[in-house]
Amino acid sequence: MTVDEYLDATPEPQRSTLIELRAMLASILPEAEEGVAYGVPAFKVNGKAVAGYAAAKRHCSYFPHSGSVISRLEPELLEGYDWAKGSLRFPIDTVPEEALIRRLVEIRLTMLEQ
Image 1 (cartoon, one colour):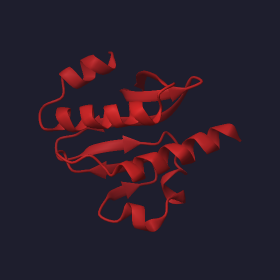
Image 2 (cartoon, one colour):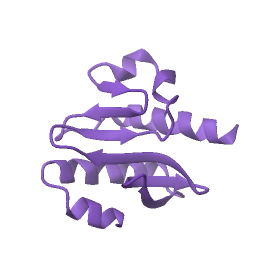
Image 3 (cartoon, helix red, strand yellow):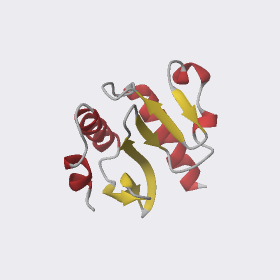
Image 4 (cartoon, helix red, strand yellow):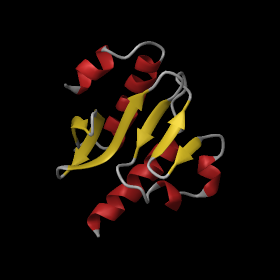
């Protein structure tokens, strides 16, 4: 499955939300490759997944592809979001704040450099 096939099979309003998140990630990670990792669309840097996303019936999810990224976030960035060690869940019709997504990506990229 390709990213476009995944998105084409996703119902609205989740599809539009994920398309907007995809565009945001593309602007944050212009050199990244797009593909599928663990069954969901993802942006990869040097072959390593950095940012993934998916739709569910009642929410959309962002995946940092590491169980220690979200716990490193500043608490105020997580206010209003439902999250667990490996995922950030957000409403089906609302893209997370760009500052939050940028910070998640920065943390993951820093981890990959170590």
